[in-house]
Length: 88
Image (cartoon, rainbow, N blue to C red; front, side, top):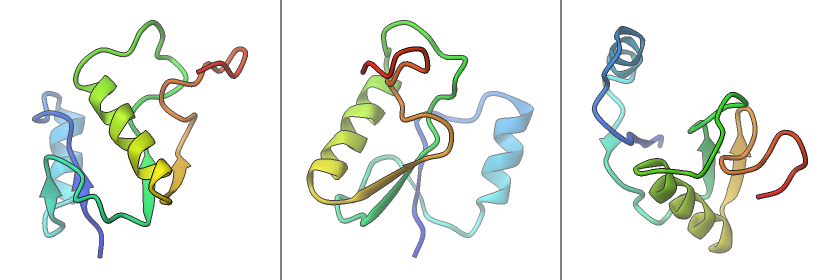
């Protein structure tokens, strides 16, 4: 079973196409809390500065799932981790 968590309504054409591709999968607004694997695809290497809403909440939810024993796999870099020095 796959569940998708959206941070916000799609605002760009690319985001709308991706949302349409996900049709048929449950798009949920928050984690169910029972995930065994979480794919972190929130931010990539171009992001910088302090995390802002809703990304900060997503990062906290990912950290909570990791602390509860879920495996977290990042598509690029884990959200909130610096690509320059590895600092969180």
